[in-house]
Length: 347
Image (tube, rainbow, N blue to C red):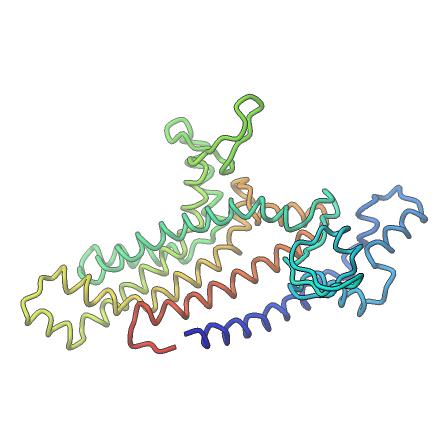
């Protein structure tokens, strides 16, 4: 198990290395960062100082090496850099230190805050939204898939299949606008829901307040497509498993239908479902970008879109790296869970 995880982590590091290269060179030429920092009225001397501070006066290859040195957890930094960038970690050496640190994603061009702080503030909202959407999709999807398989060729089966087809076909941004308008505007007085809102609201008198009702519409919107996929996968896997010999043997031994379905058939049918659940959880982090923007939900997606509008590229680059890291970790988790759920799978 440990050897398998280490191997997967090494593959993941190679993927992240490719993402770092892509992110750095993708955002070259989309405006001068120094000009974005000081605006259109800055003089040449100030511009030159900022370019020097951001190492923009260096060749591209050197800028790339400096960027890799910043985002790498193992790097080399001078004592002045550690203090100036407020790096956190373990540092060994004299004036030039070997650093084992939290990756430094640089500072926002607009707010001057560390990108890691900006993304960390937004990460809670995105994770709560993604977990809630995936929980809704998983519970309802597995339940509907089981019902469709057990009630095969009945109206329940047909309804589940048709509903899942509609769920797969409907784009998230369209469903988000539709749900926001109907339940957050037209029927707002009855539902108590709003078109926009975040997990927390800030009031001048009462301070920070939890607003769970704002989670309902974006979570449902984000969970519609994975719900449809999980329903179809569970139905197909259950129909296949129910034809196996050991299921007929379980019935022949006198086990109840409920015991056969939940203790024998479901467990062996969950392998493709786990693939969908873990894969879709990673996808939800990317899909949340549009949903968060539609509902005004403060998360990494909305922060990234706002940063794109302001051409705040350090925030956008940091967001891409954080999302890619989640993809890698979730895929590793999926491979490990296979062996836990299905003993036939060997790592």
